[in-house]
Image (cartoon, rainbow, N blue to C red; front, side, top):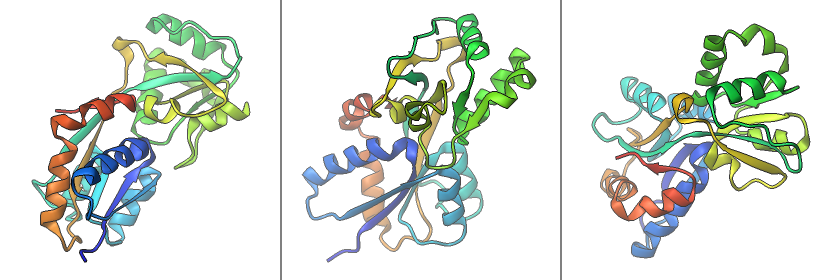
Length: 231
């Protein structure tokens, strides 16, 4: 029996990959696939340290770095999904207006506490606050979610009044109200890619799965998870 295909991913793609794997196994029931989802920074560190995986699925810039470092096979990577940032408050809390850039800025300034992740969307959000000229003003209100901890869980506990994270990570959490996506002119899109790890001993099986992950048949599953096909 073939060895399991081991995938490591960031938390942002945990559910969509789980659903896509289930879809793949409907056609390939004998294929065993093991998915482990952790904070993106931790995932990259584990691959860098030499831990054996078959597929690495992370934000595209992180995958590109692993290609450059010889941990992911050059030319094997595919862009799986694109994911935008949404905002959330605790269930039952007032819903601030987020329909425009000015409205979001006002909501940020009005919030007692703000939360976002350590991932690529959080980095871009910090740059947005700097561009608005409010970074110093709000720095003491910011709660950065530890790697692998959903911002929405902090919102649900009341530790964060206004949370920002990938819609895919917010939409299935209890205890929060998702306000909607950031307006288009300030939306932060993260592309998540997957590639064949150089440590893999079953490249043909991996390439078949990677091809499936970007096939047209996967588009509805991605949409259900608050994401869109990257191709």
